[in-house]
Picture 1 (spheres, rainbow, N blue to C red):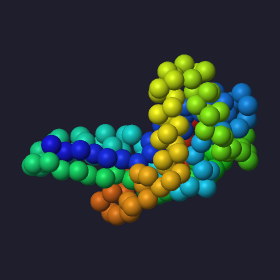
Picture 2 (cartoon, rainbow, N blue to C red):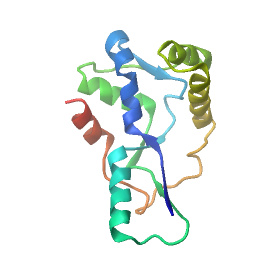
Picture 3 (tube, helix red, strand yellow):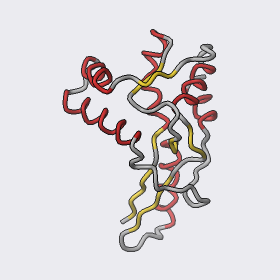
Picture 4 (spheres, one colour):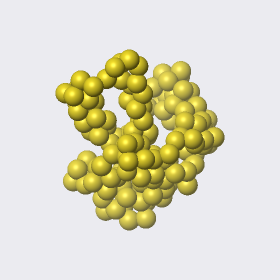
Length: 153
């Protein structure tokens, strides 16, 4: 069995588009200056498809996929702003309770909202990315710039 473990999905950034478009700001409980290994889901799918075609998995294997580079939420937000014609779009680190309330108000269950905020706070504490290191085997090709050009034409 092969388990593919990946970093923060670039697609997660798209969930903030309603806030970006209506309030001209992006934010979460994640520290805006925290380097995050961002990856496009298509790169995970490509690895899964390649391994299925090769049929080279024996036993239990884990493969880490980290994307081509680490990106901060502040830098990702500026890139989103540039694509949407909002240069200098700010990223704000919101208080955890405010994020939880906003997520619940947007339709997530209280439990799901609390778990989402806990995940963001865990990222700030260095989990799960603190000990991972990008190598030729863990890097994938799609950059944030390429992803945003395709996702936000």
